[in-house]
Length: 430
Ligand code: 5AD
Ligand code: SF4
Image (cartoon, rainbow, N blue to C red; front, side, top):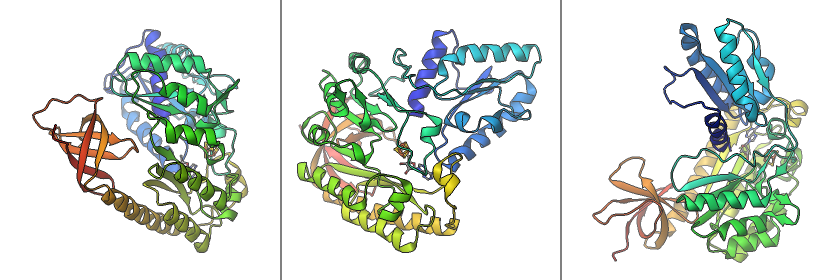
């Protein structure tokens, strides 16, 4: 979502006459688009700001902090000693050209003014702004913004504000625009994407309509909440050939007491029932997840409940995070962060090892099979190899050969060897 917001900001600034450089040594303005979801995201931004200090001492330089951290840490970031000149939250991007211009003028007049836009909006969806996307295959479309769920650990409802959905017409226009410009894969985005609602449109109807846009080969979505999976959405994922057979299903915890403390609104059994409903429709749907370990008061036995759910579901992949208390959140205010860091780290490592072993087993099961792969571009490690993704989102790498291939084509690849994260193979002989 932050990368998408950066595309919006680029678009807004370009249409106001700003130009972009990736070289901060020569830039007049440096903007950091920030995330506040966990403590390490904050730490990174403070690191970047520290590195800008010497530049700021040498010359006029406007430094702006955008996004969730700007929203969440307003006071800290604009205190007099801070090098931040411009602070803009996720709903204030339209004001950015004006605020940067003011900041440049203030600096020229040696005024130490701070330009701030951190009001949250109930309506802003940037519906009329076409993001300035990099060329390629993958285009993101934010279909909704904000979140009303207030999971007790999560800062998003405070930094991104109330849930609001875009009109389906604007979303479909953007999907058609992407198709017309050669994009093959669309990822529908939202903090709580499957709670999308606009008049008589729900997420199932929306994703089906996007998947029906001619020229689009694959549609993905992230991040959903397990509470919003009506049968129509499960059917759409299972049956529509262009909707990827992949559901990211954040578990957070496999223990009912912890789930209640997190206010996730489902029990372990309800979650497992949903997994069952998905698998009964199609056993090959790839499931991935997010898990928090070491949430306030979590005991070893409660943590083991999470491990048991991981084993039972057999996710293809999972992100595991150590709980970090966030400013303003319900857990941050009400519950002690009482699990020692070593215990959190130990739980994280055990879960990561378990998830890796399961991923490896899933990948080993594909050896010898031929899978359709959307070619994305050069492999990270070598431009002598292609990299692409399976429908389920698994990375596939193979040697380039004499046959010319274009990113964006679907090719059948026979899997010959795997790791926990990657399938290796070769194209099927024509
Ligand atoms: N501490 C640790 N992880 C968190 N997440 C959200 N808030 C926190 C927090 N305070 C994780 C959740 C969410 C993912 C995007 O980040 O697992 O699904
Ligand atoms: Fe945060 Fe997601 Fe919960 Fe919303 S649904 S509060 S974004 S974890």
